[in-house]
Image (cartoon, rainbow, N blue to C red):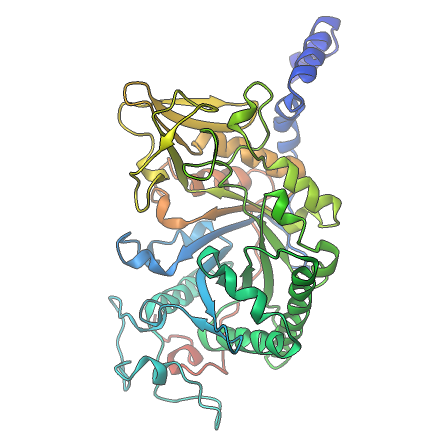
Length: 467
């Protein structure tokens, strides 16, 4: 660094840097990122919990099927939050409901033993709360949600959050939140699921409010949910804090309808979906899935960027430590293309859906890996098949970590865990980023909640003894 400082003060080097900055406005990031990142800067959420970076990963309830990714494989020791996706919304009553009761609470995993109730009654009976005495003594919780609770027992800094909505359920939010009675039932049933299922909080994945009225309805819903969460907290020993988060978009046509000053008093943090910028079917040209900056040299390859929405949320009043930056554990592919920013045909193959590949399947055989440090993006390309996949390499993940630290953000988020290598593999992106964050202040260490005395499930009320 002494040699670097000496060179920096020479006229030649100063002129070179100025020239680079004139052509590439983001060059300053690359000159300063490492210096900034070397300074320990721990950040926490907005709720005043213990400081440290968040590491948030989504686990999807359909991962137990074709993906063969059981909840036991969640890298719990590397995470501060697991977001369990998704809960649904009843269009008529605004009630928040499970979307797969078998996966969520019924599937028996190795080590599960039913005592006097085997979950063989109808799914409706198994999920109905007994309002006469508050509990049903015979019910026991199994499925992925029991495994999440066991992760919490063995990793006391791991919080679990249920996620409501998602892209497939995007149309349910607006009618559910449009009236006072709807918002109240939404909030009440949200907190009831937290009580019953052992979560530490809830994230709303509303994709997306499309008007000022829908934005206002979301703010009102956040207020009512926060009131319900705090009321539940006051009924428990120690008054634990229950979390409320929002998943927020990176596209300007969508983020303008998120009222940051309105929802800020009620939420603990927001998770910025900093991906899905370009892909087959929905983009005019091949390009990058999750670049931090736009390309000056090849603008057709970067329809969107992370810097722009991040600055929107910051300028709207969201504290930097209240923003978690999302990263993909997958890549988006383009067929019959010459590379980024070129014409293409829609890719029809993928890991689980067309034109989308798990990160753990990268790079593809016969492909060469490319990196553009100026925009912070990477991809692989096979010149023989003319096939391109945009995805994050570990090198890019480290650069994004330095960006998080340099901006003072609250941490990193990933969609979704089945796409990564196992965490003991050095290629794992979750491992790469959390290791790097550990060098700059460490991870958030607030304790999770283990006591759920009001749950309708007996084994959860008892804390899963012996497990």
